Every structure is written in C-alpha cells, then in structure tokens.
Length: 185
Image 1 (tube, rainbow, N blue to C red):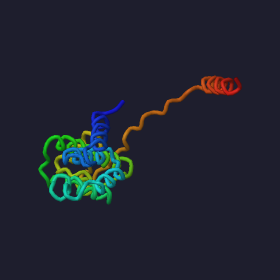
Image 2: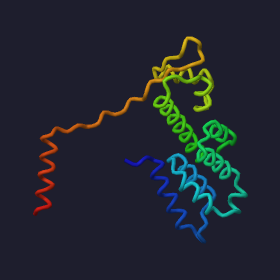
Image 3: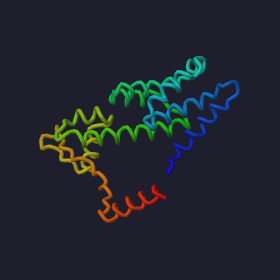
Image 4: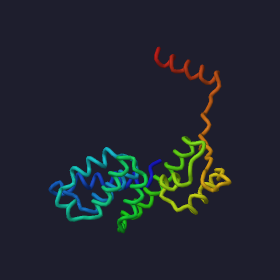
C-alpha cells in the first residue's frame, strides 16, 4: 500500500516532468526534495538538487535548508541532521514532510541503538536522537529499556522482529509440484 508521501512523490515528479520550459515551481522542488529525504532516497535527492536551476536554489532559502538536511544525512551526521532540521522555520506543506522526516530519522536511530548496543551512555542517545535528556529517558522507558542506576547509561533491548512465516514441508512440496507441472505443460 502506498503512503500519502509516495503518492505525492509521484504527482510531484509528474509536475516536474510536465513543467513548462522544464522548470517546475520552487514549491514542487522543495516538496519533492523533502520527500526523497523522507524516503531515505539520498541518491534521487542529490540528483534533484543538481537539476534544480541555480536561480531557484539561490532565491529560495527553504530549498537550500532542505538540502542542508540532505547533506547531513548523506554524511550520516545524526547530530548535525537534527540541528539542520531545527535551523529553519519550515513553511507548509514542506513542514509536514519535515516533521515526518524527523520522526522517521529518530525511529531509525532508536532501532539502530536497540540492534547495536547492549549498553550506551545517555549522552550518546541524546546525540543520536536529537532529544532532551528527559525525552530520552521517557522514550527509553517506553521501549522497556533499562536505565542504569547511575542515570548515565541505558541497556537497550533489540526491537522485535516479525516472526518469519513458516510453511510446512507438505505445502512447499505441493507448491514445487505445481510449479514443475506448470513448466512441463
């Protein structure tokens, strides 16, 4: 199922392709660039940035601010990403995409922490999530992570992975038989 951003991305790409003289509106470019970042499609974001006409990038500080976020994501600089996200006052409709982007980056950071660390300092979690200490402690408790007695360390638990769907041997044999029969006929 496509998300609203996936549908909007398709519409914006179409607008860009069908734009008169091949130049879309700054709003189209800004939204499309933000959606590519939301989708973690950094390559398309970079190519879009390179094809936006210089007069638009130079006269539209919001597009430049979105690309500043993209550059931080490209370099995997989480702390810098959060700084770039809060350094600009976003306008609608880009603000909705940026809020969703920030949530998604934060969720990915928490998942990464859960998968990668058995113990981590609160300060590192703050840097990786861009949250305040109180918000980090609250988020850790929500995830059932153990906060050390010293108040400076967290012991995360790995995120729950969906159980793989197992099929019985008989089901697999039946499917294989059907496939071979199809190929023979």
